[in-house]
Structure formats: C-alpha cells, structure tokens
Length: 101
View 1: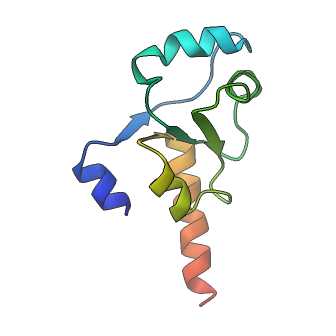
View 2: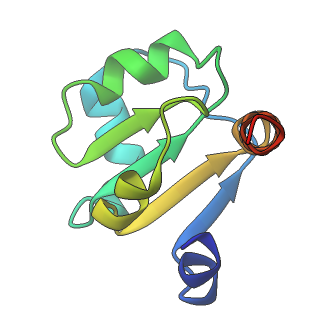
C-alpha cells in the first residue's frame, strides 16, 4: 500500500511537523493547498505539542505515531505526510513486528 501511494505521488516527506503556534488557524493556513484532501501525518512518538493541538480541530487531518499507524489510515487518506522521525521509528516498529512472527 505504501508503494502504491508513493507511485501516485501521495506521500510527502517533511523534516519535522514542528510549528511556532498551537493555533488551528495557523496550521490551516499552512495546509491551505491541501485542505480539500484527507491528510494523515506520520510523526515520531514525541510529536510537537503545538502541531498536535492545532491539528486536533481540523476534521480532515489525522496525526498518528508509528505504533498507531496502520493500513486503514493509508486507505482513508488522500495524502500522507511523513516526518523523518516518523519514518525511522515506523521502520523500527515494523521490524519488531516481523521479528515476533
């Protein structure tokens, strides 16, 4: 599923999710080009509190850490924003899951 999203250019890699203010309006302005889409952010386990507070009030934005992220999140979202920390920690989570099989 991740490879399909990548092939369709539906994965956006970002350095970090950190924002200056915890205001929803501020985040809404940043995400304005994408507000018609359903967005999922894969962040690290210690996501920026300003970002999570601002995203909480946006209906089309979901914020997931690597442990919470799953296939239904990918299917339900139009665009997937992945932070560097989120990706590396997600790889660790997946490797632990496969070792336990």
